[in-house]
Image (cartoon, rainbow, N blue to C red; front, top):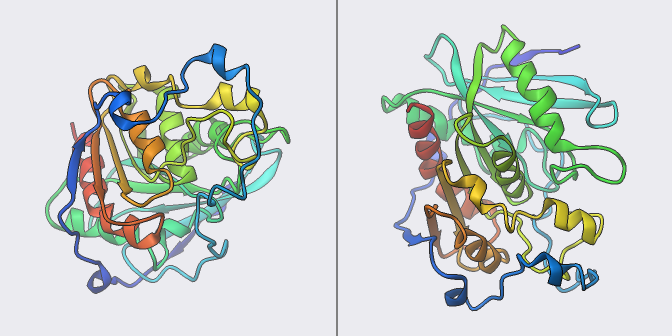
Length: 315
């Protein structure tokens, strides 16, 4: 049973940082120009065994308190939970933000969270995506809602414990959003947004659902590994799991889906992300600037991402 608890929040617009000029890179660069060998050859991938390079590869998310401080900015946050069969019967929490001053049914962007975070992190004081959304709507742009659900450390695909965060999002959370009259959301077409682990997840779900139902996908610092010998067990349960769920080779699925990728030039996933984006036809919008795998960088690009998602949802 879904439990809905509305919370009225106070605007914190004054805290929104300026967005500096960013170079927009063409994502259609050849893989050779990237100086990194592509790993889409499944025959070569099966001849190696994955090595645990956890000590050599930085974690794909900063240490973040899984229980962030109360949300204090932007429009109201509606929260609830449901028992998820796709997550092994776990009580799964969710949160939805609708912009103030808007009535009627709204399209929705599914927000997929990073490792060591949860469904409320994107709405917390370090990111405040709902405040960015409110500013976008107040400027006269087409409104939409944001919706996030907690997948823990699942990485948005089926794991050895039987839990599948990706299936939970598509098979349980999305229908719940459509069928809850208190939320008044349309899910016929939806957008996807994610950062780090959630960036990978947003791209993976977009590749599964495809256009035209996925209106657009925007990601920050997606956690991508191109080398089948170099991925951590937190992301994949072994080589077979990696081969089944890696996004390398899935680029043709995005031929009709608008994609925006933002990543800092010093981010640990920068090379792999550029390598993956080089396989997209047509090219994705690819934005980069000085910055790392940090909340500060992710917050700085949210206005661009919200505008991109809103523009494509309104088409």
